[in-house]
Amino acid sequence: MDFTFNAFYTLIAAVIVLLLGRFLVNKIDFLKRYNIPEPVAGGLVAAIISLIIHSLWGYSITTSAELQTSFMLIFFASIGLSANFAKLREGGIGLVIFLIAVSVFIIVQNTVGMTLASLLGIDPLIGLIAGSITLTGGHGTAGAWGEILETQHGIQGALVIGMASATFGLIIGGIIGGPLAKMLINRYELATPRTAAQVEKRDNTPLDVNSTEYIPFEYPHRVRLITADNAITTLGLFAGCLAFAEFMTGFSKGTAFELPTFVWALAGGVILRNVLEGVFKVKVFDRAIDVFGNASLSLYLAMALLSLKLWQLADLAGPLMVILGAQTITMALYAAFITFRVMGKNYDAAVLAAGHCGFGMGATPTAVANMQAITNMYGASHKAFLIVPLCGAFFVDLINATVIQVILKFFV
Image (tube, rainbow, N blue to C red; front, side, top):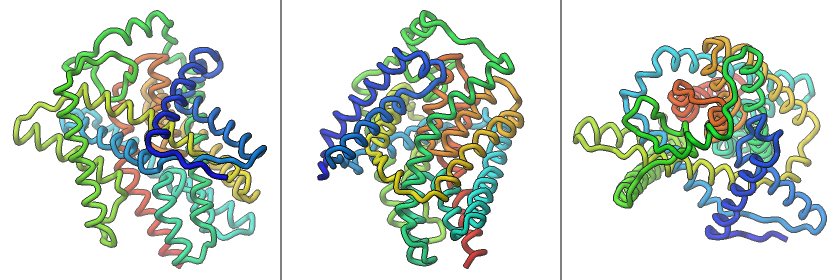
């Protein structure tokens, strides 16, 4: 029997998951030591409880997909609204190098998936599904390409395989990023953990957005001083971004520049932010954008993990689990030996490696959560928070779509 939660119950459940995750991370030393994000900790417990209930009594819960999507779009819009061109230029050559490293990994990811699929005696395109379509692409890309692979390429169950693989990646991306960064930081003595007193003092000190310290999403627990007027104006900006995203998704459907809705939400934020400031000289309230963006990030991740049906993962064929296991090892090794090294083998590089694990196996929100878990423990990494959100949310999707198109043309 399936119970459907409406938007209100979904929101209540997500908040409970976040509070549970916060409690677990604060009380269980292992979770704190290895920088497991709070939404991941709470969400996994909720998913395991759902699995037990389904196994014993056959009950399952379906949450509001519309509400989850809305928070995801708000998060991506907040990335765009935070991206004034002056700050983007600060990324400099590091942004270019990171993008090249990530682009090469997309090719590596698909090579591993398709090669193993061939060796295991299954269609190589299933290896593509268990490659960048679902792992770098996430659930949205899995849904879009799953339908195409089923109807145009004859891959039966491509959508189900895609959703299960994306779910696996979301979980793993949130689990391996923190421990990997911690290992790199400790091995190369890049930083020392902050004490609980130091973290509390920092979080209770209001963040000055005019200072050079200010980078969006970097301090999720830090106090931000905003007013009701700021909040209302910012909600209007978000509404404009989401309206633009909905319009462009429909307008571009079936054209050469068709993109996922979340990419249009991010692009709308970039356009709106820079037109307001560059043309009309209107001050955008970064503090309010940051608050709404961080809240949406946490709620989206909680809802995504709350909606997991782990029993569907148990139905995956053995060969697919072999491929996904190999992809996990490949991601960890690539982040440690390639991403970390080409980005400078310093503290910023370690945080970037954690972020790469997040969107290389799961999604950009997971990448940001991974980095927040590290910087909460060890301190700021302005470079990582300048580079990862836009790279993982915008550029990578364009490159991934191009690579997938080329591969499919080759196999037709």
